[in-house]
Length: 148
Image 1 (cartoon, one colour):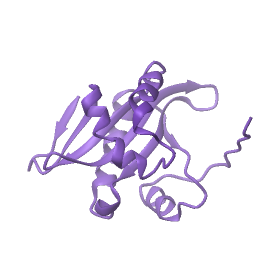
Image 2 (cartoon, helix red, strand yellow):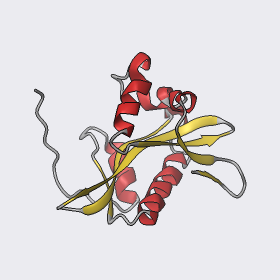
Image 3 (cartoon, one colour):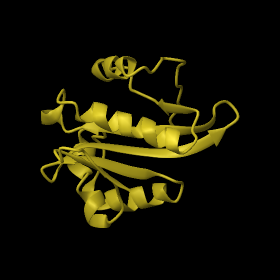
């Protein structure tokens, strides 16, 4: 699934080949600092078995923003799109790429009969929180975790 803007200044595409997936590594690593290039594709391929997809927004054939997402279903929400990752290349932030990609995710969710778009965001990511609130998201709970 590829979408190109009317003025062709950017394109949005769900990526599938190893080469395309690897093109997302540098941008994704700016969000997920623990990533290692050597097992990046293997890790994403494992997630794809669970419905994970990775989408890029590219301008002038350069990846500007990346999102990893999946469609899930549970008793609480019904069918929803869960955003695992949404990140814009650091030097390209505040240029609208993240907003365009977020809007694409919302449309994808609507097109796939989802009730909600859901994501978790680190408590320290104040800029991201502001962005999500401006996009119409609400803070609806706390996310708890425990290392084992």
